Amino acid sequence: MKLNIYLETKKSLIDNALETFFAERKSNKKESPFSLLYEAMHYSLFPSGKRLRPILTCAAAEAIGGKTEDVLDIACAIEMVHTYSLIHDDLPAMDDDDYRRGKPTNHIKYGEATAILAGDALVTEAFGLIAQARKKLNIPSDTLLEIIEDLALACGASGMIGGQLLDIQIQEKSEDEINYPELEFLYIRKTGNLILAAITSGAKALKASEKQIKALTQYGINLGLAFQVVDDILDMHDNYRGPDGGKKPAFPTILSLDETKQRSWELASRAVEALKEFDQKADPLREIAHYVVERRE
Image (cartoon, rainbow, N blue to C red):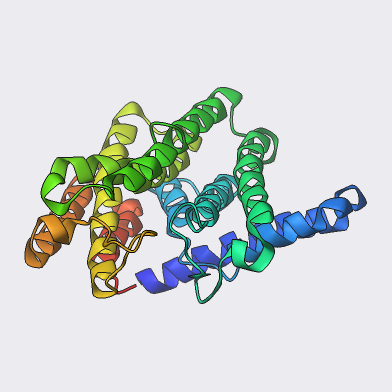
């Protein structure tokens, strides 16, 4: 199957599962007092982005020999966490963005208070979805606890949230004060950790071996960093600026543009190399690594 068809097929499955989540809430009269909150949550989830993170969850499960249906709720949880982070990143106190995915950001549409609560609700419901997988997907409790722990660490003070704070702090420095290891450290936490958790959660749900988890971890670390490096290249063309109007630190401000592009390909190659012991069932993961560095948006 060609990658574009694979991505669209998985995206459709994830979108349908997320729509089912909201349809179930809407049909429950006990949930009716919270209709505005669910509306705000749904607003930022749809129309959807690429759904790359939950697709990686599905692809990792398939690499172990499973199916998308085996991890669909976990994949939806990953997307909920990602969307929560976008809502909060867009807030005036953070990146202060007015538009995302071609429409007003959540706080512009619903106000800051509702946007904050929508983000809070998404991340909380995400952990609920994973917990429910014990019954719905017949995943052992100890496995789900490990997945929940991984996701909590990926999102927490030393993960995505901590990375956001580092991103705010680093904007106070001049370009001469920022070095490559410092920026890499930031990006691994702000972006890479959730991508890694998306991958390992899909594999762990299918009872992957320690050797397989180790290989997929190396894949995820390199893929997550490659994703952010390419984001920097794309943002450079947009002359992206931080909330204070200053130019945001990025890899092309430390390395040359050509060096940054070369770095992205090196990271993608390392990601693919990490999968050398996997058979053709891991081909979607391999192709996604190339897709990440070749994308134009």
